[in-house]
Image (cartoon, rainbow, N blue to C red; front, top):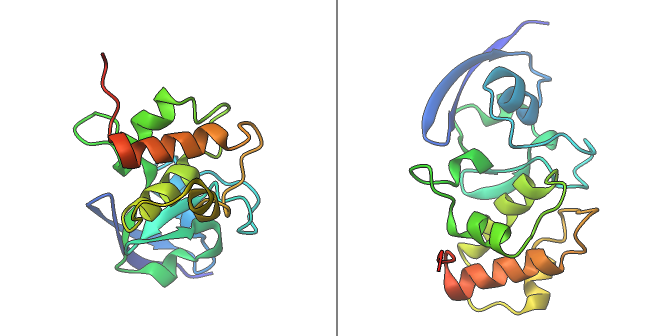
Length: 160
């Protein structure tokens, strides 16, 4: 199969790739570019472990071919931190123990971060609805919702 040349901007860095038309975005990110935050879970868009942001929207990268996104702006969990410091949402996940094994965490963070960009004082139920496309087999979601809620009300936790 012939490869196609595409350009992706990932976390602000431009990358030119030669990929087969059937290469999934998650595969291109992980294997071609070394962005391993998005995990391959179910490969059916049900678990959300592969969630990234494309042109501002959270998508499941196991369901998109890389060639479909030629020229796209992509953000991965690696791009949330700023200057080596955790983003407020990441810090709240840490402070509220919003992760256990960590497999779902990158996708959960990307979904929640995208949701928080437009959320205005959501209820706990609305937060749960926003993340319902991301499965976590470890936490029971309570601490994840606490972390998202704390990000809205407190921003980044302080080290006091």
